[in-house]
Image 1: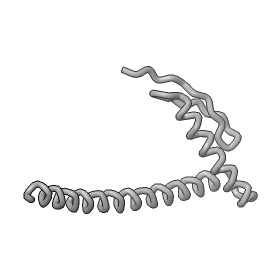
Image 2: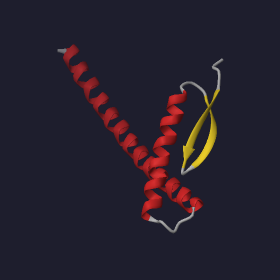
Image 3: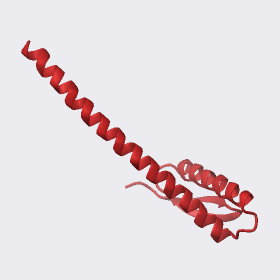
Length: 96
């Protein structure tokens, strides 16, 4: 069983202690990326409070996730078509 370790991070000027499973650096990197995103949003909307900035950040990430899910579905479909195409070519090559 992997050992979980506490990791201290700062997101939007607030300190958090999170629990990291495998590699604490991954949690630190994710927190740093999120912090950059939220600071970018807060610079564009200086009158927004931290809750609004967090919600806008979540919407941005949800939109990005949906886009990546669509890209993945499209890639899987293309790979499926190519696999069938290659299987057909291989069958023909083995028959001939």
